[in-house]
Image (cartoon, rainbow, N blue to C red; front, side, top):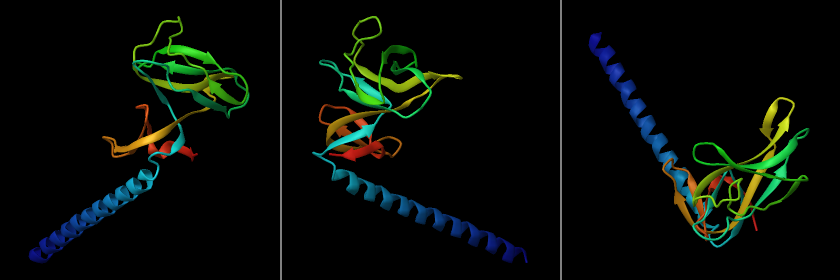
Length: 171
């Protein structure tokens, strides 16, 4: 009976290993499917929701559009934060949608160092600061890459990157 019990345990372990192998194969197939889908976006102009922006070494950052979806908020603005999460500039926005003008400067008018910054659309509500809506960036896709976390990234011709899953429209 001990032999039968050990044999049953070995059989269960073998089934688990086979199940893991099968799941790995399915995952690899889905990853390849995603790549094929995103490669079709190369040389296409796309819009994507974003929570980051890049201040380039030269020139101005790419413009962003906003869409205020929350109601009952005042003082709606695009908040720009550095890698520590400190707000380096707030740019007021008016109306339900539009383009956010940004010149690459901090709140004191000094140029921000080149690099990646967080961006969000926020406003003031009855319980304090709250998300007000979405920010969107547009660019022409030049390359598809896979990030360290396995997610697909689209690189624009100007060097900016966005998660491929964040694409909201293809123009």
